Length: 158
Image (cartoon, rainbow, N blue to C red; front, side):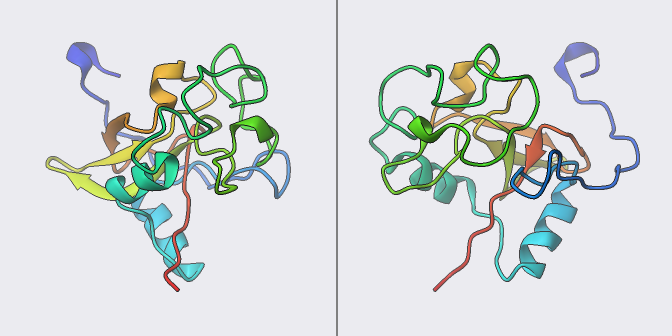
């Protein structure tokens, strides 16, 4: 981040990567790359409201319920190894519908954009405090940002 709370312009995008094998989230993608990958996989990025509904159904504080994060719930700061982990490593944090890693592990790009070349990410990452893992919390980042802490979740319509 630059002085005054503004994001710096991103450097050229690194090669997207999946750390620790194919069970880890794909990271290192800009918003445009994440949008293209979702499309190539036969889907799309969720909108921010769709992501919030998927995470908490409008009633849960966190994807697993209302209790604060504890070991086994999410890969968050002080609850994980400080890097992305394979999907499903925190089974107590799954939604009642069976979706894993909705909170923590990596932020997830959404299709929701904001003026000034930004986009909304949801869910928090392995470096996030528990506030960022709440279903209603969103964050704005530059669309050109490619980070090891940002990945994606693909939505497919029936």
